[in-house]
Amino acid sequence: MSDVIAMTDEQKFFFDMKGWITLPAVLDDGEIEEMKAVVYGGAKRSYEAPLDRLLDHPAIVGILTEILAEERYVSETCYGFRCEASFTTIRPPGWATAERRDNGMPHVVRPPQRANAMRYQVAGGKIFSGLTRVVWELEEAKSGQGATSFLSGSHKAHFPYGGPDPLKPNIGESPWEDAMRDAMEDYSCPPGSVVIFTESLVHAANDWTNPDNARCAVFNCYNSLWSQWHRTNLDHEAIMQMPEKRRTLFRGTWQLGEGGNQVYAEENKAL
Ligand SMILES: O=C(O)CCC(=O)C(=O)O
Ligand SMILES: [Fe+2]
Image (cartoon, rainbow, N blue to C red):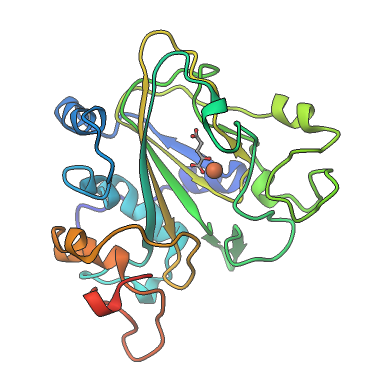
């Protein structure tokens, strides 16, 4: 794992405090062009080559290991975390959130105010980020012009969002919805940058108003080896196209036993 870049103390501090971090300009120009060509070309399955290289890119493996894995489940031949969803998005200038099912409503996977298996936690000096998103921005993103936005710190909220249903995974119907939206922040980044956030954090899609370029992004979702939110939308044949270690991102969601669950196989694929 010599090419893996460890999460820095600074990244840990900001990820814990805000619930999200950016890694600017990770991909070089050649990689950006290569990835963009397949996304703009209509790639529906971002698990497939060459986009599968993003799944375990050395720039994110160290961070995901830090925030999703336990040391004893990490080895040279398998990852200590799982990948459970991937999609691409192309948003031309003028794209509006009305095209999304959620209409751009700020939301979470599950409200972190109550204990649940997807939740952000820190104990014993160790982060466990729960369901975690890695966004690859393949075009420039400009703050206030359609990047994903975040209510920083809300992944550690103890009090409800104010709506009638405390179990609702979004801030809709809250009397202070507008105030929460006003408190949200986003980022600017050059093409080839990464944004990592815990899905316990209130976050939202936004109208893409940047007139200069479309949003062209790959959204990959990760989880602990022993919890799962998405149903795997990937067949065995596609997984077998990947190098052996990358395949382990898709192994079954269990670990019991001597040595645990380290090897991907058709009969050991996450459902
Ligand atoms: O499309 C966006 O900017 C937000 C996506 C989102 O809600 C997510 O990744 O969970
Ligand atoms: Fe989301």
